[in-house]
Image 1 (tube, rainbow, N blue to C red):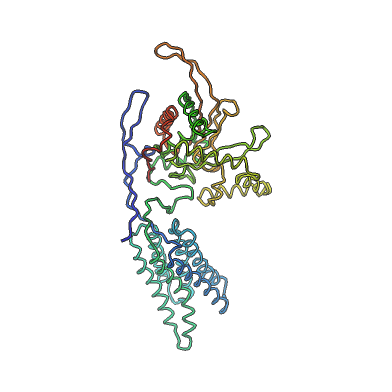
Image 2 (image 1 turned 90 degrees about the vertical axis):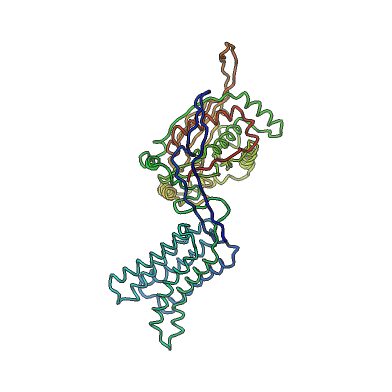
Length: 511
């Protein structure tokens, strides 16, 4: 029996501290928003390691090649025939095979696109080959073809839980196409009829082989489906106001909130000195802030959301932190951007090693970083076309169609952008969010400062602080959630020794 991939998220109970002494319990989910129990889901996939997958791809390619050869031998006919009955099905066959071979384990559901293209081709074929049909009968055939394509789409997306159902679905167009060719069969033209039937038969044979090559995902991870992006999973159970607000507050700068706080760092400085004695020679307050932020995401996963195309997405366990660095600390040295990928389970040492490696790669590399090379390539585009290029990139990003390599090098896509004003010797600034991209959080922290305070016992003491300023997209979570986030992050920074061990639990975001 094949395992069924089941995801179930229900209510969970969490403790939220209000003030210093008061505490109460509330029933809430990551994000503080209503989350109905998630239905059981399954995801199907095909693997390149399976010989049936390659046979299926071979059938698809052979179908496309034979169709093109037959069109060349017999003549392509008119323009409508060429595009509707040659190009369209040939592209659909090749596309189906490519999807299965290149990304069949993660994006198998996208094979529904070429199947719908084949349904459109069958409509063209029915219209041209069966002219005796009246309008209603033609409409009935088209309805049947698209119904079968819809059943396929629902099946590969896991809505229909038994993949073998498709075997019966495939019999309908195969029988109809065979009956049509059989009715036209003449003894002296048997071979020609077989060749004419071959492209569609090979396509259906490929689909049948695909049924036996298909397996159920059982690795326990979430797998993408329609509406998801390469860099995030769409959240579908947000309460209505959270789904409507991105259409009211369209840009990030019309939906940002500013937050400032100061963190007492006496314990953090002792922790930093200990880490340096342990061999982490460049360990500093930046690493403490980053590690505390990563640990906060482990408890409050709503912090790792973003908006794109007026929809809210979650990055899951991929925490992307962007940072501007200089190869040399002087005013003439050019800026470069690095992107740190962290996991909610990372410790302070893990964050240090990941960041230190990225910084060293940029400082020691004789050539520029991927970010620099991408920016330089854009500068080669003439000004008039550059504006169009940026518009095109923005449009592709809106619909989640930007290639993954561009998302990786873009400093405007990530979980948070952080900048150190302390290294410049000035207080932190409130940095705006970018309307291009999907960064929901911008953090700025200043240089360390001392403050003289009077304790409740009347003692005069001197303490050391670091100031942090945040600019936040209020559409990813509400104010109550942000309040809990910053109180928790502040406690972590005041007791950074907890960052030496992975978190006891990593809370998942809502569906």
